[in-house]
Image 1 (cartoon, chains in turn purple, blue):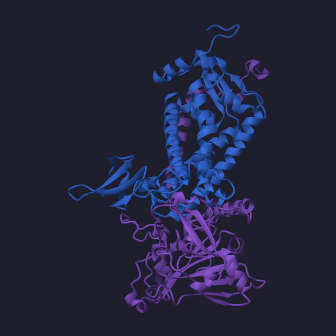
Image 2 (cartoon, chains in turn brown, red):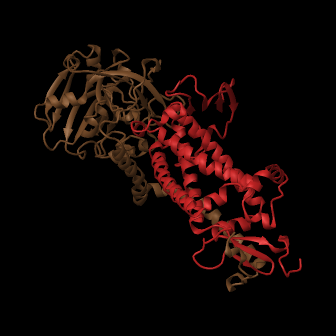
Image 3 (tube, chains in turn cyan, orange):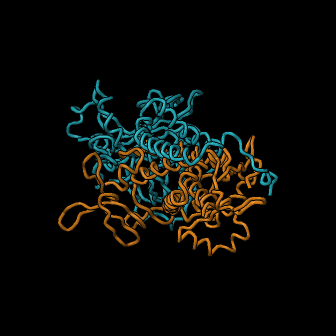
Length: 326
Length: 290
């Protein structure tokens, strides 16, 4: 086929080694090397992931994901909307199913009559909007698929006011970049002075799973918004330290996306408490933990530094991606 | 055979008892070993991610009470815990490995055991980071391999069976079943089953992994309706899992055959590029006595 094949017998010096003698050594060496490599790789992975270099390296994949998605997704690319026939018979209530907080319970007891959504931060006209105010604004209904970071999906029909409408009423100041959502549900209690110690353990096992797992023996807290620590007990709220309530954030690109709404109805009925009543964010091109429930206040900010640990959300501060598009 | 693949030096070297042939160019060798690392990490971090919701469904959404596959734990009649795998209505006990296994000296309900997941303990966030970082490495490595392979003709030469090989399909199956592998001249090229299985992995299974993986991304979905290709997002997730199993099966068979057909020679050729054919098994050349 090629001239090389016809090459006369060449015997370069480097190949003159009596291979039969060299081979066993080489074989032994290769086997040992492969074995060592395998063992150290498996044992070393966790140590690598915990090191600063490892953290940075692992973050590179996340950055690349965000970069490509920003490249691909235009403000006009819409999440798929489904026909009503595909609505899941049961929209799995996820995360916090019943906020333990007294103030929230009082609101819920009166069907959220006294509820006011606060919109403040870098806005010209801070707003306090009741549910009827919000229902009076233009509405959007969308039947979309909710994708949990864990892997499962459910389809629901959401009705709500586009976030853009609310932000327009408030008027953004020039430095505005993010919309931060402050929620009603307490996730855990921060102990003054020893926060780091307290959080170290739950961080490892916590998981914004959108379901209640009864079998999660090693994963004592696997609910979405309620995970992270022991379920908070409302009775001794004060004695446990400062409550850490769920928080999330999106940038203005997502905030002004036509499918980004503050939903008050699910499948044609008022949003149940288990699914985030009275108001839940829908950011359809991202995963479930971005869809903040029990939204009480929207704060428009320039950055995310002052929010929680600065990564933009409760789960983001516990290792999950801020841009949850994958 | 491997023409023009070395920067310098011949592709075939004859020594007294052996014919050395340069079989694997550097790019292919690097791609192979990088792929070993990528697939190992993708597999183990993938099992970590699977453990977060150890059930598979068909369609766009999950049917929680009716999964297609689930790996979980329940209790025997006497109240002791057991691990189970549920597949389309059938339940198999898998205590110790799947569903219920040892974690730090204690029995823990988890789909895949700690030794198979990355990280070992349940930590979805870190598992996802490993998975995405190495998914990128896998994709870039695969692209380089494909571009190089197509550009140099290596891919066609390695993976597409020659006409005479297709006619010898039956005898190749017989050779594999009896573990008698081609020697001499015939060992210079991959055999027909080898070529076809590599072709299926390179052209079907690995691309399917990438596509079903991307199909699970709500972000990518808004640009490319990938889930529709596979019957919905949950179907895509199920296919992602099934193809993972096929790849694991491929790797097991691949490693077994590497061991059985001359481990030193195979390993050397994938590390240094040089593959050896024993001279006594070669037909006598002109002027040679057998």
